[in-house]
Length: 188
Image (cartoon, rainbow, N blue to C red; front, top):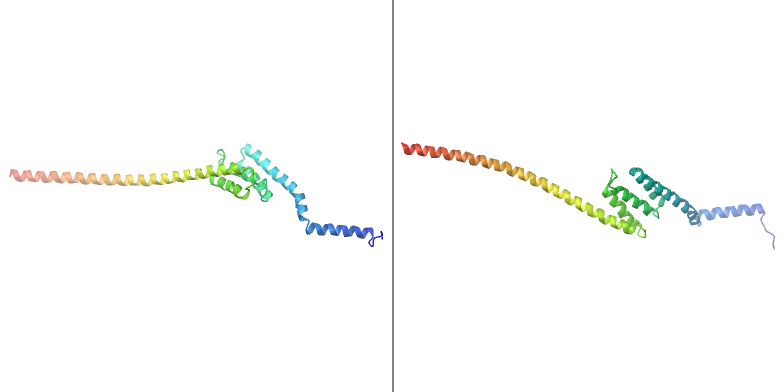
């Protein structure tokens, strides 16, 4: 009863085949769980590098490192951290290529895709501030357009005023000529 029908070598092949089948079929989550800490470490490395580049003033390279981190994160944390840093970098006042609308997109994406993030409330504040900034900019543009329209109207009115002044001057000359002709008629 204790004897096996298979030789030790055959049993080894069977065990190996079973392991391969399990790895290919139902145990891929186990393999993913093993890969995830390594992947997360790569994400963290990219985020750390992006912070270092940011501090050095290399904002474009910092954004690229965060983009790599976000790509590797696969919709999981610390992808939220990468998005947050991208938003801050895009809005940073010393960044010569600052882009407030782009920054707003990053923060809105963080709020939408990472509702459980520890950075959620900060991202919401950034969204409000950047939206208000956009409204102010749009209001400023509207005022500038209105100013241009008013300036054109003012110039048109000045030209019209000049024409009217010339017409009045012409009319005075005609009045003076008429008055002189009347005097001459009376004298005769």
